[in-house]
Length: 210
Image 1 (cartoon, rainbow, N blue to C red):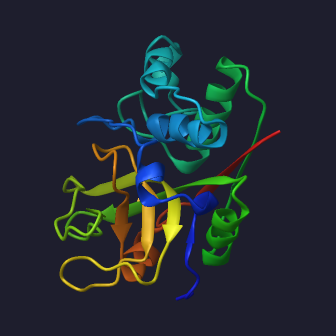
Image 2: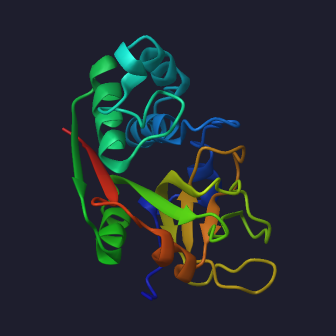
């Protein structure tokens, strides 16, 4: 594991976490992450719910291009990239959006760059859910998978000195679409590498302003 300590644009955790939106009990993480990615780059306040509403009025609720079998069943990585592109187009924002099969150095490079936002997927089977916790908490925030589950998040920090209250190293900090507005959501390196892009051809989206 890299010993590099880096927070996106050197922002404090609270400033990063302020860009988190709340998907509630829905499967709309990719839509809210798309909005948050653009907001980070622009300092704007677009709401992911507007993208949810737009898809509700599309043929087949965005299936295939944007979502898995309808608007309320989540999105794969390539579909997340399409969502980001569409959100940009709907709001007149020129974006460079790419998908790739990345490795850890790619995430760290994007964090250091400060002009690129990455969106990643974690995928897991029932009973093998990774522990993703708010701040230093030790309780997980992921709901149990029915048989397989996934979540889209924005890598926002890598801090090998970050530990939870049980003393476990949790170096990966993510901006996620849950309730916190002052803390990121953190994972151990083991859990992250075990679930990052599992079952996916692509495992990350990169977004830049043109």
